[in-house]
Image (cartoon, rainbow, N blue to C red):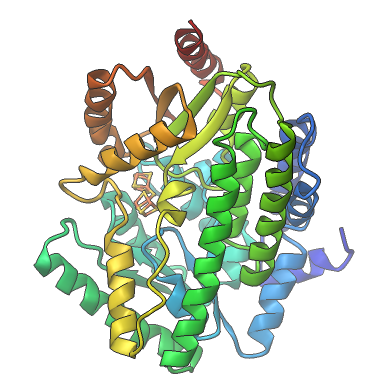
Length: 425
Ligand code: BJ8
C-alpha cells in the first residue's frame, strides 16, 4: 500500500485507530475467503487489486475528481438514478454497509433491534471510519423501508443528505410521484454539480451504465453452466465492486472476466466439479464485505449460481431504453426502469416471485436459500410468499435470518447442509 494513504485518510478526518483496526481485520479475511479458492479466473486479479486498494487508490481517484470540480454522491439503494449523477459528471458510490465492525458504534445511538445494514453504515459515519463516506459531497437516501427512512434524519445531522421519496405501490399515481421525485433529484444534482442535464450527457450516461449492467449480466449468467466457471463468491464480489469502482474501467474488467468464462465454458472447465449441488439465494442485498452466506454454501460442497437480490439480478435485470430522443422521453425511460425494480418495499410485490422463478428455472439451481437480514420487516414478511411459491412447485427452500456477526455461522451451516442433502438425493 502506498505510504501517503494515512496522510490522505487523516486529511479526510478519519479516526485512524478504528480505521486501522477495520483494515487489519478485513485483509486476512479476504485472503482466507477469496485467494484460497481453487482455479479462480485469471481476470479476478484485477478485482483482488481493487480490494487491496479499496481505501487507497480508489479514494485518491475520487478526491482527484473532486479536485477538478466533480462531485461524489453516496448511495445505499438501487433506486438512486445513477444515470443522472453520471450525466452531470458526478461519481455515484455505493457506500459500505456490510460489516459488524461499525455496528456497536451505531448502537450507542440507534436501537439494537434494527437492520444491520443500516447500523453498519450509520456506524461508519458516526465513527468516521469510511473514506468513501467522508469523500461524499452528499448521501442520497430513499424512503424505502422505515429503518432507512428514519435513520436518514439522524444522518442528516452529521452529513449532507438528500432523500428521494420512493412510492410504495406501482399504480399511475405512484408513477407520477416517482416522475416528480426524479425531476426534483435532477434539480438537486444540477445544483450540487453545477452542471445541466442535457439530451447528450444523459444519453451518454445511459449507454455507460447500461454497458455495466450488461457486463454484470454476462458474468452472472455464465454461472448457469455446469460446471460453474466462477464461484458465487467471486460473482458477488464483482457485483459489490461495481457499486464503487470507476464505471468504464469496471465494465471493461467485468467483460474481460466474462470473455474468460466463455472460454472456460467452451472447454468444460469450472471452479467446482460438474454435478456440484447448485443453490440460488434470494432476499436482502449483501453489501460489501458481507460474504457470509456465499462462503458458508461454497465451503459446504455446493455452488451459488444466482442471486435474486439488489447485489445481483435486481440490478442488471433491465437496461434503460436507449431509443428515447428528447430529454423528457429519456427521463420517462428512467421512470420505467426504476419502477420495475421488485423491492419488498412495494405492495403488492408479486413480480418478485416471477423473477425468482425465472432465475430458478434458468440457472439450473436445485434449491433456494431465502436470506434476510435480521429485523428487515419487508423481506421477512415476503419470506412467507416465497415459501408458499416454492412449496407449490416442490422447490427445496430454506429460509434464514442472519446478521453480520460470526455467532450464527454454525447454525447457518447446519441449515445449508440440510438443504444440500435434500437437493442431492
Ligand atoms: S431496492 S432491497 S437496496 S431498499 S435490508 S435497509 S430494506 S431493513 S436494502 Fe434495499 Fe433499495 Fe429495496 Fe434494494 Fe431496509 Fe431491509 Fe435493511 Fe434494506
